[in-house]
Length: 118
Figure 1 (cartoon, rainbow, N blue to C red):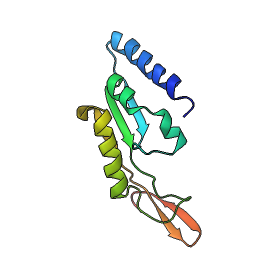
Figure 2 (figure 1 turned 90 degrees about the horizontal axis):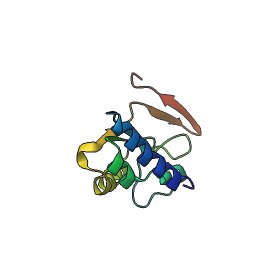
Figure 3 (figure 1 turned 90 degrees about the vertical axis):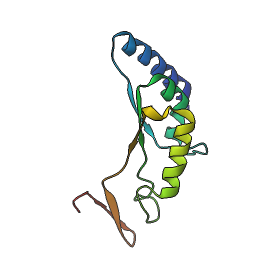
Figure 4 (figure 1 turned 30 degrees about the horizontal axis):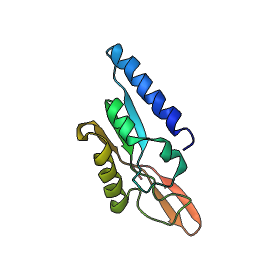
């Protein structure tokens, strides 16, 4: 989060330079909402991304993992919250949703990662 301003300036300046050369800027960002507490996600300013990026790909997954209780990769509540926040800050036509094709299997304290075929 302490890099928020510097990262936002970088995105703005990079966008201007790329667009001047006829190139596009695609951003990949943490899925977040207005009440976000995950520190790295706080550096991702959706308004800046929406203004300067040509496409913003949102990582809306990994909400349940080896550090949490068992659950889905993208609980519907989280998906809705992130999408609502994104739509308030990023033009709809620039939003791309990234969803997981992997999961976890919880057996007591042991968590095993699973790939799509599994």
